[in-house]
Length: 291
Ligand SMILES: [Zn+2]
Image (cartoon, rainbow, N blue to C red; front, side, top):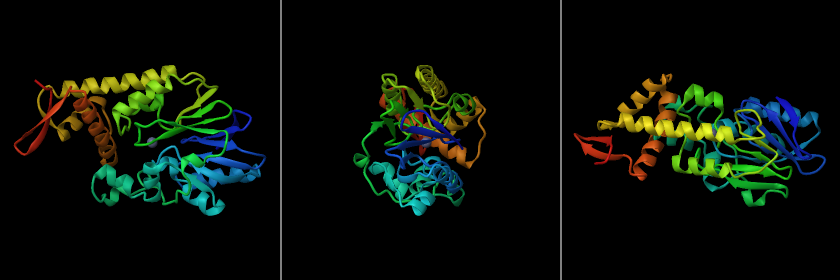
């Protein structure tokens, strides 16, 4: 993990999930997310030790396992507070909720692994209790109540509100919980003015407008493809199969769960905007274009 200073008080650790760091004085720091797992947590603690810093708090942008995976070990070793809002906090306190949501029942054991279920840690503070110099922005859509953090150096940590170019081109159907809110968040991001913007899974950007457009275009493309697929009434499973075929996606239980959950978010968005409707036929729910 490479430590990069990007403002008077703001740093980040370049990582497969970037870790934000905000210094409130000579020694005390707040982390923004903690990476994939306890290994990531240990690497963060090593950097913290080398700098003679003390972790006062962890701010989680959202509760996905690759953002909270280092929480447990860092909290155990530093007694740091964990800051999150109510809904994301529920998942951090009880990580079984994450695979439960993906499976919509008690999850298969195959879905209870570090990619979908972090180790348990304990949220201790509300986001309103953050120290001066840090501002919370709402970035919901990718997850129910995702947030971003703006630091006093005019630097924005954006969580997963902007998906990387690499992921867009490789996976196409990136994870979304609420498509309408995801799109609203993209519009909001386009209004922000700052020195540097740091999405969690790609490099830092001075200008995010092109990346915003790529995200929006891909969402619109997927909407169009679902509408094309639904020219004839089809069940969720068949639409999902056709989406996997269209984008040549690798099919396994995890991808089925993630892309399937995301397809449900798209179906809801298209239903709410009156572009799709459903019928109950032969004991199936079939999605189709309204008359
Ligand atoms: Zn995420």
